[in-house]
Image (cartoon, rainbow, N blue to C red; front, side, top):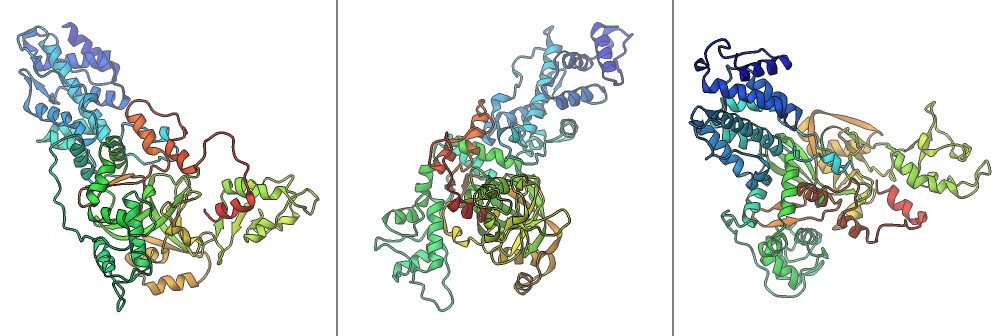
Length: 592
C-alpha cells in the first residue's frame, strides 16, 4: 500500500470514519490524481487542525468520503466555480469585512507537470474551503463575541453550521451568490454598504437628490409666531395642519418637528429656526455629509451590528434604537408607527438583544428591582429614629407608596422591621397600581434575562428632551396607549375604546398576545436617509468605541470606560462624589 493511502486510512479510522482507499493493493497508475489529492487533503487536515473545532469536523467529514466531489479543483487546477467564489471573497471589504482575513491560494502557482502539483491542489482545496467557512461565519456576525465587549451586548447570533455550508455550496450552480447570501438582507445594511464604498472613493453612484422646499431669510421662527414662512416650514418638515387651524402659526407640532430635525442633524434642539437651522434645512445633505465623511470605522461597527440581528426580522415587529431614543413598528418592511422613548443611563444601560413580546399589562404593579433597593432605598433607611431605636427612617417608603410583602403574602409594616438585622434586598418591595406608579398605566412584556420591558411613565416631560437616557434600563414609551392599540388591533381587533376601558378597568390586567411580536433592541449610531445623507447619533454607551477597537485588533478591556460616557457624565472618573439622596432618589426611583 502506498504511504499516503495508509496515512489516509489511519486518519479516517482515528476519527471513527469509514476508511476508503483507491485500489490500495493495485498499481499506482490506478490511483487518479483526484484520489491522490483527496488523500493528501486528509493528511494535511490531520497535521494542521482548523482554528475552530466545528470547521475541523466539517472538513474532515466532507473529505472522508470519495463519493463527494472536490469543490474547487480538478486535475487541471482551479475549476470555474472556484474563481467566482474567490472573486466574491475578494470583494469582502465592500461588505464591511476584510478580504485579507481570508487566505486564498495563488492562482498562478499551479503546474500540472510539477512534482508538487498534488500538494498544490490539496492546499488550494483546503484554503478555499476554509475561506468559504470563515467568510460565511463572519458575514453572519461571528467575528466578535459581543459578550466579551459588554454584558449589555447580548444578541442571539445565528451562525451558519460549517457542515451545512459545505454540503449546500457543493450543489449550488452559483456558489458565489450563495456565499453572498450570508450578508444581511436589510435595506439599511445595503445603504451603509454603498455609503462605505463611496467614502472609500469607490464608484458608488450619487443618489438622485429630491427637490426640497427652501426657507428664505427672515425672522427667527419660534413657538407661537405667526408668519408665512411657517407654512413653508410645515411643508418642508411634513407637518400637516390641524383641521381649521392656521397653517402659518408655529404650534407645538411644528416645534417637535423642528427639534427632531435639529437633533438628527447634530445641532442644539432649541426649536428655533434661525440662520443656522435654515442653512441645514436648505442643504441637509451637505451638513450631514460633512459630519459623516471619513467616519468609516463607525459605519463598519454599525454594519457589524446589523449582522447580529435575525436574518428574518419578521413581517411585523418592533425595533427600538437606543442612541436615537426612538421606537418604530414595522409591517412588511414599512414603518407604521414611531414614538419617542427614554432609555437607560450610561451606568444602567438598556441592553442590545432580540426577544418576543408576549403580553400587555394594564395598571401594573411595580416590583422594585434589587439594584434600586440597594442603591436608592437602603441609604434612606440609615437616618432617623425607628421603632427599635436603631436610627432608620422608613418615611421614604410611605412617600412613594412602596409596600413590603412578607413570605406569607401579607403586607408588613416597615416600622416593625429591625433594619439593623434585615437586608432590604431580601424583601419583596412593590408599588401598587395608581397615579404615582412609576410604570404608569401599562407595560409591554417580552421576558428576557435583563428584566427589560417597555412601559408608560409619570415623567412625560422628559420626552421633550433631545437626550433621553434617564432610566434604570427599561424603556419608557411616549403615547403608550397608541402603541398598545396598534398592537392589540392587529392581534385581537381592539379599538381605542377597548384600550381606554382597560386603562380605566381593573388592576394588573394581563392581556396575552395571540401572536408574539418580535422586539429588537438595537444600537445604531449611523443611518442612511432616503436622500443618501447620513444621520449620526451619539455613542452613549461606548459600544462603537469598543467594537472599533476590537475590529482593529485591540479590544478594550471589559468595562473600560469609553470617552463618550465620560463626556455625558460631565466629570472625570475617579473618587465618587458624595451623593445628595434628598434630590437623587426622586430622579432615580421614578426614572426606572
